[in-house]
Length: 349
Ligand code: SF4
Image 1 (cartoon, rainbow, N blue to C red):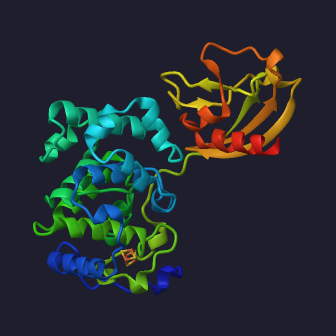
Image 2 (cartoon, protein in one colour; image 1 turned 120 degrees about the horizontal axis):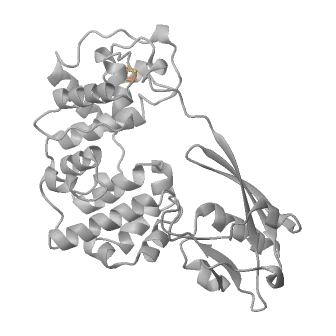
Image 3 (cartoon, rainbow, N blue to C red; image 1 turned 180 degrees about the vertical axis):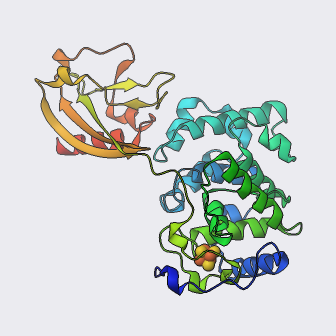
């Protein structure tokens, strides 16, 4: 979709709140014709919808679907009870490749709460869904409206962008006042009938025509309700946090049986429970040969990871480190940057 300049955006002729029904109808009609057939839209199973919502919190649809993560995860844990019975290591392994592993742990806690407090049946009421561990107002509203067709408003990043443009909101949306305003619009525009289609349509509009960088206003189904003159200037947020550069130093060490030394991240650390190449202080790698240099990004950090070859005789395993055979490493949960680094090093041998 081509980007349009502020001057060629068509002018609004109606106000979304004053012409609420017409706005809802336009949006839902468009969605029914053009909405994408995602697997979580093809079901009213609240567990399947919750899993999709948690996965999509910080991961693009293309990754969640294109790389098969969602379908694979649902095949392993088709119900909350299946997930509740799994160990944390199994769950982290099933989540591998999606990053932000706290989400998997929250989902595990929610599955256990459903099994323990609701006999394994997904709760029916919004308040009960909201009370599950790790579930915020957006996720609870999304599950209640998509699974049960309950009239619950939702505001995610896509909806926030659509509203700030529709209403030409010239204030920051990441303040409590800005956030409150967005939820008021969400409530004010929500139809009592068929909120499932309406909420899905709103999100899809933000993912397609009303995208962040290239809004296609000329073809937008609700452009006659939209009051902003310069879509790319909205929404207004605090300026982006500056990227911080970080260096990490790791070792690759194999013993006489060909086993590889790995380090388990401890509780309280970002990747708690996952296995990675052992990290060392820079000073401890000065005499070692560099095997691999790679980079990866996580939140606001841009990390340069250097991996050094360390002979087993000179390697001092620490308390949280153990030797693993190459086959057993396959089944261990490992962060993607470490998995890629390890595979590259092993392919070089
Ligand atoms: S809602 Fe978004 S895409 Fe539609 S006219 Fe407004 S700014 Fe453009």
